[in-house]
Image 1 (cartoon, rainbow, N blue to C red):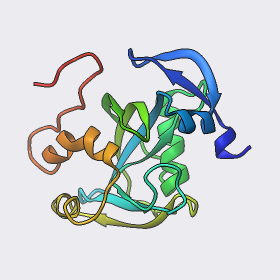
Image 2: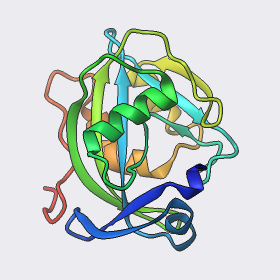
Image 3: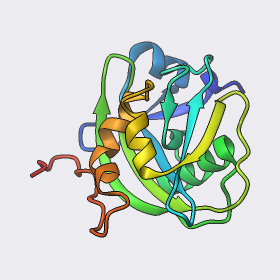
Length: 184
């Protein structure tokens, strides 16, 4: 089965599955609302793994990202999807993921309910060649600089901007807003 043939559950405005399942290709072609995961991978020094997506990715090709992740397959539990995506994209395994929260994202390319996580991983990074073209560990300060220097995927930046601005500080990082709630 190709990625375009994967079966994807559609999600409603309430952040839950609607019961309808369609092929991933249809999700992309019609920009249907689905669910996806984001996993910010940090090492024990507090650095964040930043990578550049391949030029063949179906959404935001060639852009940088500071979260691994992807589309939930039909029937998949968000946590399990996040574990799968972190392993597939970066080879991250054997670590517990900590939830950062849920939020919604939509633009002219994609619309989804996000399940965000983070983890601490000091093992080797192994790229999935179809998805990752470059990557490196960077400090939080350097990542903040990079956001003004190179193009990043807009969804990760929008969904995790508050978390990133608090990352590295002594105060706890805020969670992304839950659907239906307003940020203060």
